[in-house]
Length: 233
Image 1 (cartoon, rainbow, N blue to C red):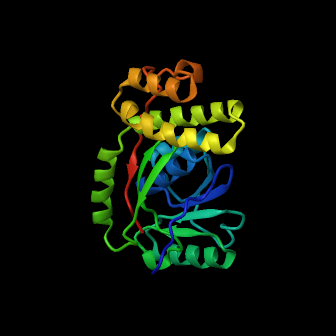
Image 2: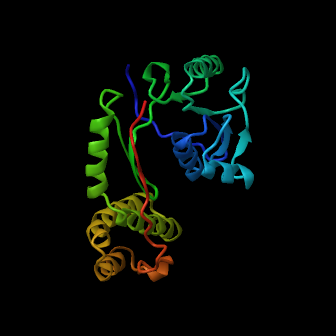
Image 3: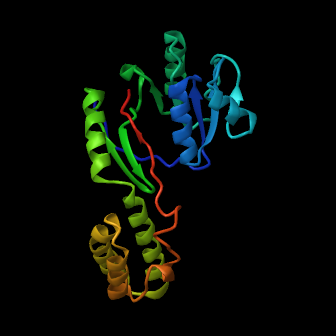
């Protein structure tokens, strides 16, 4: 099958996960991290999913999939091991035009889940088009080592600098040039925790420092280690 790489916006969009095991929990966490509205349809749940359902983090339909369950959803994941449920979910999703991923059944999928490295807003996806999830996981781990958690701080600084430039530099071409220069100049010092050098580059390029942008790179919340996720069908 042929694929094109896409990042789909799911903020505040209704998404459904069919199944309640550990893989379903991974799917739910990924959707919640993207600010989706999540419903789980399953006769059973992991303990963590039970907690999410009890506190209202997710909506829960405590039963097997039924006809019409996918109406109104923008995205669907099916992790239920029952092949009959998988086939029914796929048929309904196709009729409704809802993108669906069925775990370990690439022939039923309208999209596959890539191996992912996530560092704040930076997302690096790797896919072998389902040919070898094992190789995708190996490549993902190599990328995770190349692009460590410090890239989240780098993106935080670049985002704040971009906002500053929008407010203080009226020339779009000049803003673009400065943004490009900052991305090059700040990458090395911020990914090596050389905050003094980063401060100097910021002041050289746009005349303000980290504190002026509201950033304390030594704060515990400045960099958060984020999980990587495996490729699957």
